[in-house]
Image (cartoon, rainbow, N blue to C red):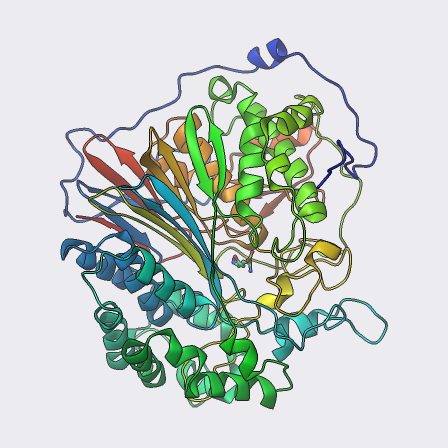
Length: 605
Ligand code: DON
């Protein structure tokens, strides 16, 4: 596909090119900090520690990371029980994929707002013995009954009620197919699916205390869950208030469903009574999902998007996610700048990063969609030449005006998806991000299955230029169509050094996922931060439209002032996604559980 040379829709762009020596004179070129664990670091298996990580001054709302060291491997997830299940599988000789499958099913029980059977996602796998990486795309697909105009109102305008809050929003779930495919292809062979499901089944049946993120998210999602009696029955009390501190969440129906999957594999989900109940839930509420849509669902094994950055290999997710393409595009642009000497989170380095974000998100809106349906110029967008051309247009002192704002700021917060990272003793790695889109998805539980259904079809461009819930726009390439996957931002990523796993990362956060992952990668690889600090440092985000930089509240005021002085429209926003990550260290791995949402745990073995 021929892609025009630069054609950005920026209005009033002022190209004032500044030679790089000007940047080199920017404030204080201090040496990047390196926090390799010292003799005081915890021993493998020791209780995890909470680090108030070194961070810029005048923090008002410090993010934290809980870190742990593993000599052989590491599991980092949003929920402590799921992490422990993953570590146990590794200790019993399982590989990273075995552990990922056990964790993926466990989170469907212990983190029901995002962990799921009724949604979809993406898994990056690195196989050490073959030095090979694969990308498993188990994104939801649109049912056959979805058409280009499905999410429009009578006036032909995008209707968010339809794409976010009604049954038309339900995509065909991909998670069960994706996790079982990963196990069949890349599991160690030492565990049956039933063995990996057993801990999740026990937790569903016996129940878990309502605490941490479960407690927080149930409070927020109460109105969504109250709309559906099948969901209210599980997550709310008789008086309609959500289960709270001191209560136990028991999910008997979900335990039955998991039992059936343990017995019959993915078939149980896609062809049996479970599929019938999912269809009935959709049809009875006015949806178009049919049995044949579910039966025909296929996860896809794809070639990862590949990039390099300062001699590291970056492997990330191709379409139907936009994550890998734009992560590599931004890294390519930024590789040409002396970021390291500018220091992490200095006004000068943040400015360059923000400018790269604008360019990448403009391309996202124009060129990205499901590559099984439309041509996506992946090679071009991820090429060094293209990045060099874009870099030429960046002014190191002045923000480029985008010239357009959306009437509504993005609605999405930072937590409705979940990412986990795993490395095993053989050097295999899994980066997995999956989602129901919103907290608890649509909020609808399918009949007596215990399965919460997604509202992921909102990630399509409902109309050309219409924004999804995260403020992302698109056009024909991401238009709804039968069987098509809506464009995602999920960015599970593995960074290799000399063929060995160096960094495993990813994040929730809707549109902010890609920029969160960018900042974790830069913090760890470019600035040499410890993984705890890499995930803790306050983050910024720009997505081209609206023309504003969202910064976390912990960003020091003097930095915000300096960005404003460069012409950025700065807005304080909510915390940006929990980026649970792993970094190789001498003699093992350090994991960092991002505490932006409560309850996460990094644990090594
Ligand atoms: O696939 C996507 O990009 C979105 N459906 C992800 C949603 C999300 O991360 C919400 N969490 N904050």
